[in-house]
Image 1 (cartoon, rainbow, N blue to C red):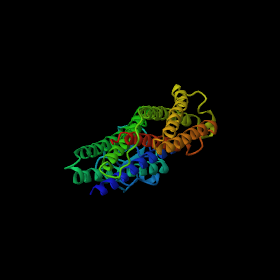
Image 2: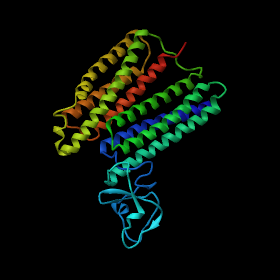
Image 3: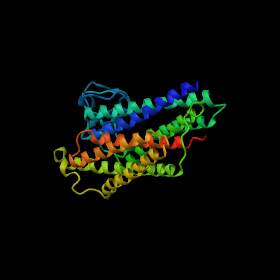
Image 4: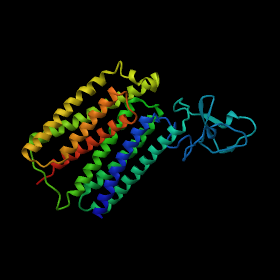
Length: 342
């Protein structure tokens, strides 16, 4: 049962990271408001593919909760009914969460896929929690409690996703949503490490106090970078809406102060992790994931340079965000490795 738990936990971790990837694709394509309601999409479990499905028509059956766009507003069916020859306003109520009333089928389906991946991740985490009871209720109750905490956090994350939509992509809420995804990934990594600790062949790492301190500092800097990067990304999105994709070269003409902090911090992050890399080699500590970290930071810096000097090549922002998320996970797992007791 413990082996099955570890396998499902790994699947949960992969799916949580796929949610981050899907979220990056949503941001990259500007699909955040592709579904203006939650958890359904325009009141449908399977969203529409054509604007005609969101328009009023005579002799058409609408189900309770389905949404139409009329007079540049969203209207929700009060009950299930079949329309007559003329529009009857009494059968509809205004959607009051926000006033965004646009339909783009590509945006809608990108956001819908994002939600589907999120639902799959939620089910995997729930399965992980159920299995934790069977595998560890008598030996490692902490794993059981943390697994169910992860379920609660996934529910909280889903609620945050809803508030992001209702706020029409408020930057602060987007940042909190992103940070919470990293918290969940970190918690699953912690659970995975604790479950693996029961194995007799688990590798015990060499200890070095300075290395451990630098590792914690590097993790904190990465988290700061993610927060700053999310703010910069929101600024870029707003500028693109204002200027249009044909003027990407003007997006960072007058950037936020956060942009300069974000760019300068990259040198600090690189320096700290280079120190870690060199110390690991010098003392032969055996932290092979330090090599991963250096490659991830290289990709981070390269993608950041490409965005700045090549006017945001398509997909580069998503690569930048996903690499930062993976970097956080690798660094956090290295901390778990160094904390293993001999």
